[in-house]
Image 1: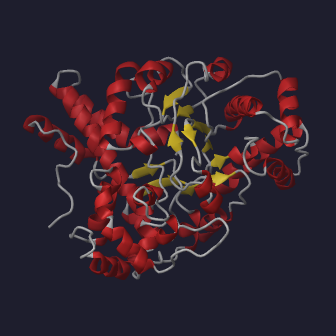
Image 2: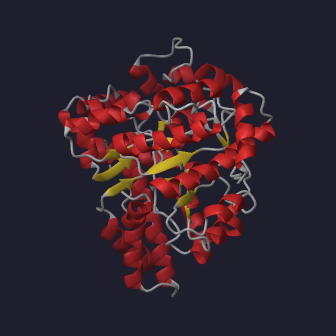
Image 3: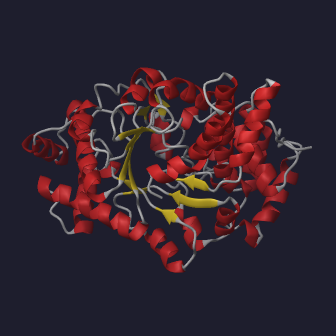
Length: 469
């Protein structure tokens, strides 16, 4: 019995469902543009088999393990690595059985659709995962993973991925990207410049990171001028070595500043000494967003800003397991006041692309859509993270289209570490967008021929254009 309903996520009214299905069939097979994510470039560089089902579906995916952990299951039991390298469960079959016993916790979540999609379309699994089917499904997936057709590059091609971008720290040497480039493989895997570690005074080891930045670039990063020059150098390196077309900035707020250079230099000096207050650290981060935008005008990198997460909410989990363990929680975010300094400085320049994400849905219609609907440089990123679901995607379209239209948005990105969820996530986005478009046609707000054109744009062209891929 198939795990997936062919009409999943389509409207229930028969005529509208039929049109949504027709629209979807026109974009279902389009190549995937994955311009923002966190897959490991090492997979594509070495092209080694994925080790086992648990390491593919459970241990690296915080969407999965955070839900199990919410029911009291320790991260150690799911094999999540500890920051101190201490022991965690290492038997993948035990991890898988634990996952299977608790698979019901994912009911009605996007993760359930993504995992079921991968089970059925990638591995040919047609039974629901449970305690009773755990070993059978484990063995079926493990057998597939032993075959060359399931190595990372083969799956990349099978998934019809035209381009994928990973995300690396500004201090990364891009070894794996060099290896991919030198291998002669035709798959397009680019990096993204993520400078948080050398922009955020509250990032662990900030002063040491700045010193490392200086060593990598042969610039005197103890000075403001040398620090900015080092950023320019690393951005150029990311473009040349890793094919970067974008930068990515994960700040706690959307605050931007456009400070006099002397004031910015004084804040930088305080940051190096570890003497910034929380307010001064936020002010410095805000100014650096404007500096990054100006650098983007010079070097062409698309700028992504995704604020609004209270990161590492659990101190004990952060201490034991480090970052990105499911404890980044959305918070209220201001954009109108926060983005004004940056937009006043460079927002009227159509040569700049600044893509704004949000975890605060209340800002869609009130702030983000009106801003993107007038500033040439500003585009809206897709529903993201806690909102990349049917409901979240539909709310985004309903609340932003009337003011920002379709063409001040940038299609879809999957923002994932879970490789096999990429086609599943894009499939969900295409189904939701086609459902929305079918409703517009049915209610007389869009002509049918236009709906087919917009469906193609949302599934493919806008992301490729916005990210210059």
